[in-house]
Amino acid sequence: MLNFVQLAAEKYMSENKNVSISLSGGGSGTGIAALINGTANIANISRSLKTREIQLINKHNRKFEKIPVGLDGVVVIVNSSNPVESLTVKQLMEIYSGKITNWNQVGGEDKKIILYSRENSSGTYEFFRKKVLNFDKKSHSVDFSTGIQLLQGTSAVAQAVSHDNYGIGYGGIGYFRNREDVKILKIAADENREMISPIVNGKIDFTAIENETYFLSRQLHCYINTESKQEVLDFINFLRSDFGQKIIEDSGFIPLQKQDE
Image 1: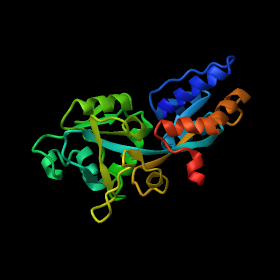
Image 2 (image 1 turned 90 degrees about the vertical axis):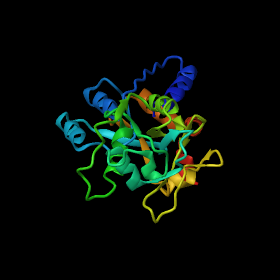
Image 3 (image 1 turned 120 degrees about the horizontal axis):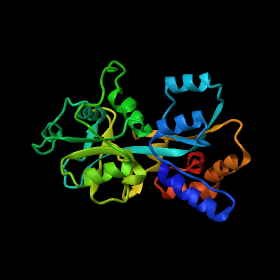
């Protein structure tokens, strides 16, 4: 969520000279920890809160409000030279857990698959882990392969895959939608389902993400203290305003208005 919040903050500060907004990345876990310990006013979260985070919130007698700001599609990418066009979620699970290690096992070249991932403090990491590695509820023991390369930030994942003919990565669609050096794969929940791409004719398929036809769809939220000062609420309202939502859409996410259409 860092990209669109940063753009929104810059615009907001240009129109409100008395306001200073400082942003820091590092993932959803970093954000919620900062909100709990009082060093942040807003935590941008792209996943559900973990049980231990809820316990920590209760331990500190904090009361937070979850405010939706948009929807996102997490996409799986390969190098643009890779002939593979689509994967089932089971294949994706077996790739990222280390069971499938060669591209020829999924219709590609006889080359070792190189795994790239977000760092484990990332909400995207946790979302992918839950939706893909544990998509079969009987497979709770499945986890990321020990050979995975953890990268800090989705931009780093994009760069790594763009320079690695046999790499695979994942992240928010906004980081990849306009790149020609990586390919966004079609995904199917299983081998009997249609392969769905979140990109159609070069544009984001908002409907597929909104109605979750695309398997890796998720909600984006801002968490704030229920006793937040008015200047914090004003910025949240800006994010949810028509102008703020246009920034979200231009960044490759689905604004709240589209959900209501």
